[in-house]
Image (cartoon, rainbow, N blue to C red; front, side, top):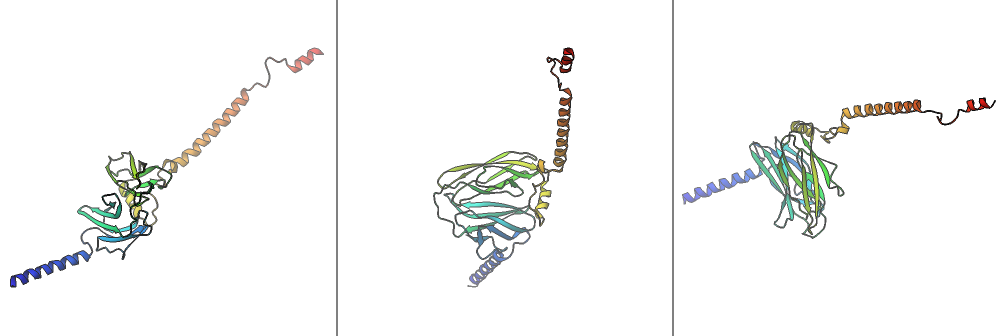
Length: 279
């Protein structure tokens, strides 16, 4: 009896510790302190001591996306959509990766639209940390540029379909430093229609650390702005110089041509000489 009581007490103690651990903030590791979504609200709000949440969609026909987040500590954030066996979107998985491990946060939809055979194969976005897409993804264009830091070598890309019932597989690729390539994503609509998107990977003349610092600033908007050739200072210097040079060439050409033009026809008798002979 005493042995049973001791075992029972130990089980209660272990259960109590587990309950506390589930509710207490994660310690000695980076963790999310806040996160918000476009087109969705976390039921009951976000709690940094929890890792599984219910997510209610504002429009249950469209995929939600991350709007903002805050991390306590240094970690990379990876986003993946959760699908069932029929590729029906059921939630979002957010992973924090750091040197000593990782933490996965799961956000399960409470009101996703029932599966329907629509024809929407549009891409609404492409999630990729430390990357920027130009122009912004829209329903007309299928070719884009994906700008990344010069020394970024690992890309984890998660497509965001416009229709919650459409499907597009994520991609993870390893590149050599400075390497540029083209990536293709195929969106499959619920009815089987497909649409192919191309993203040309381009490098900016900034390191990953420089881009991180820019992104952490309060007034951050873009790390690509000012990096394209036509936006660089040397472009603004070169264009006027070239334009001035062209203007000089045009003026010289016009002047030279004017000097070389003979106002008289060599085959026509001179008017004055002809009149003098008559007299």
